[in-house]
Length: 566
Image (tube, rainbow, N blue to C red; front, side, top):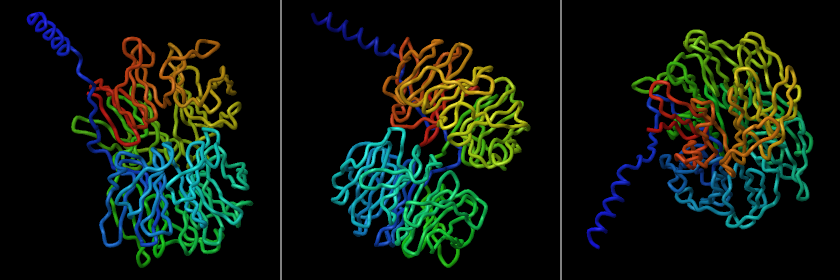
């Protein structure tokens, strides 16, 4: 029997040796600029400063007399919010994995409550701690040790900010705008604003809120009035200090109001960079994409820390791979990534016309821009109020271009010269994706897929969940949704795999069929042998997928870096 056992063992070893090696992911970031979106800032009563970062590191902490440090317990998470309690040492972090709590000034953190993404936090004046996330509002009456559900929203509604006004709790949301919490029920108080990204209250309960670049104020939380800063720049975020209310603006710095948001004055000197969060107690702190600044004697002093990996929102292929970054467009060369041009910032998406004749890019508050010299220089081609629009999505079919403006507007252009609205049939819908097979256009929305019939959008058969990715080729149309993939069969949708996963990006193979699918935190999948095979990157939120035209390797841009499959 011994020889037989030996033969069987050798056979097994030989099969193992012939098995294909497991996919290996490597970071591909050499030369790309560092970036981390600072999502929140809080200062404790002992002057400990907490900064929430939506990248690796999650929460950075500076205790009095110490250097900045990343919270080791949170290093593999992304943080959306942070709040400090009146009790020294007690603070909370809202992460992709739920609420984390510290009692020792951020030296150690423990998770409490349900495991779901928490995007807003507030410690109320009565000591109640509130936490908001995707479709949910939680409350804790024991200092964050245990949590109860205060309200269950539609899953597509995300709470982005919380503040306590004179009339009650105010919620800033994506999907329902601004809500006033009364007697255990939410009431819309700013119905025309679908997305309100931040809200803050002063010690008297007067409030300010930021909605799509505009600033609003309220004496109590019931009635709201639009107000302006001294500079004509879009508002990025709002905050509060004991002295009053704060508002930050792209390229202009931080502003303070001592009268409930009616009049504003500059804090220290103007800042050329964008401030994503501001707050403080005895002085003002400002969190940017590159680090934290503190106001001292009428000027800003860099405080640290250095955080952030490259943030690439989009990838495109010409004769080389191109990346859309916060610092412009970068080109992949043999030694790494190299910037092309120097007059472009905040690129969200891009594509290349055939043979590299022109580059088009969607930007953060510069509209659609075009380059006819390989990216060396750029010009804004959208007109009127859309010259400073946020453009997260572009699509091309023939000579026709479509551009998505922030969440709910769509522009159309023939060749990029003249632009007009192409909204009929899509008004009131949140558009997540645009796609074209070269002739027709489709839009993925919170109400399914629409196709452009001349000048009007018409709905295809309904789908459960939002459509967050589309792949349109001459061989067919595939939709990525919050519940997997679906293929259009002419009159109905047919499930195409990945049920239960939130698909956010698709890449076609040589046959025009989906070859790679990127998800929100569930990994990257490859179509292999008649089924979807997990390639890895579980826990990453995919932004874009592309094939390197030089090496043929798969490159994936996520919220926490750029990866290459070797």
